[in-house]
Every structure is written in structure tokens, then in C-alpha cells.
Image (cartoon, rainbow, N blue to C red; front, side, top):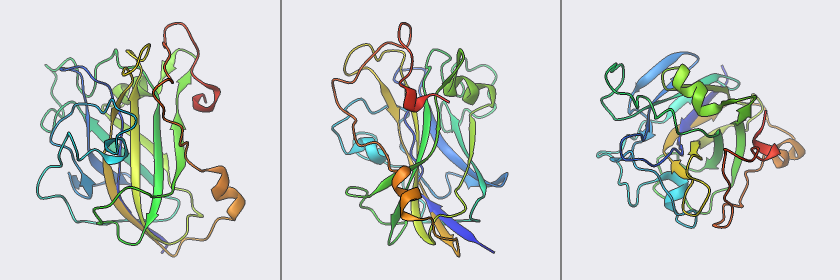
Length: 237
């Protein structure tokens, strides 16, 4: 059986004292791996605003991780359907009296997922890694990816490429809230990593991997308003 172990899941979400969100549960082919299992869960649901900070990779700085950090490396079959689950707080799942569960409806924006191959999915260091994008969902008509996240009660699902080389990986899921992105710092990023390991997967050709390379152009002058301009074409579906 082709397996993959996912270790890092990161996500970017919006900033608003009462409307933030935290990635806290991971599913493989519809099966939960457990609450906060295999995920570097931040203690705060506050977003990252500084795009020059290493916290943009996986949190853990201004928003320290919950202790002890899970050392579980989640096995994932190559080509599996995985799901990242977000909630307003670590205890708000299923609450009907929280208007911002799983995230505020005003926090429109895209959701993206990246992988980085690592020697050890439980390693502390997350800088200097080669991230490549495996999923993106932006604006479809008048519906944003975050709108779908809310409709799905905090869950976003996507497929792991069947041709990912075997080994251990960090999975980073990024939710970006753009409601205040008309100025810098305005876009709000909520990030976390999850641990995984691919075993026995077929290898992609170099051209395929090169085509999935992550953007490295987060910069302070990149700002816009979602109310007057379209999402950049690379984030549209």
C-alpha cells in the first residue's frame, strides 16, 4: 500500500479579535487522526500580519505552539483525499451560539496547501525548505474558498498527488483573509503545520514538480481590496 506521512499543516486566516480560526484536526480518506494529533497547533487564533516574518511559515513565534507539540507522523496513502479542519477556538467545534465559528463570514479569501520534503517530519526547523503547492481555491463567481470552509463547518478537502516521492513531509494549509487587505499590514494569515510521510509513492517527473513550485513573493507592497478588484488569476479556479 502506498503511504505518506504528513507532518505539517499550516494555514493563514484573518485577524479580528473575535473572528479568527485554528487548524486543529486532520483527516485521511475521511478518517480523523485525532484532535490536535500530528499538528503544530498555536496557542492563539490570532493571524500573522508580517509577511517578512518566519512565523508566516508555521506560526510558533508570536503565537507559540501548544505544549507538548504532537510528535505523531501521520501515514497517508499516495493519492489520498485529506481534510484540514478549522475552528474559531480549540473548544468551539459544534457550538451554535458562536457567530464566528469556524471563522467570521467577513473573512473572505483563498485557501492554499503546500508540501515540503524533510528528513524528519518532527524536526523543529522549518526555514529554508522547498515548498511546492498542491492545492488552491480562490474566487469562483461570488464565492470565496473561505465561504466554502464556513459552509462545510470548518473543513477543506483536497487530494495528495499520487506521484509525490516517498518520504516525510510537512503539510502547510494556508487560509488568507483579505477583508482588510487594502493596506499593509492588512491581509491576515493563520498558519499551522502537520506531520506526514509518503511511503512507496511513484515519483513525479522534474517538470511536474517544477510546475508546482510555491510562490516566494509575499511582499509588503502587495495589497488590494477584494471589494473593487478581482483575485489575481493564479488564485482563481
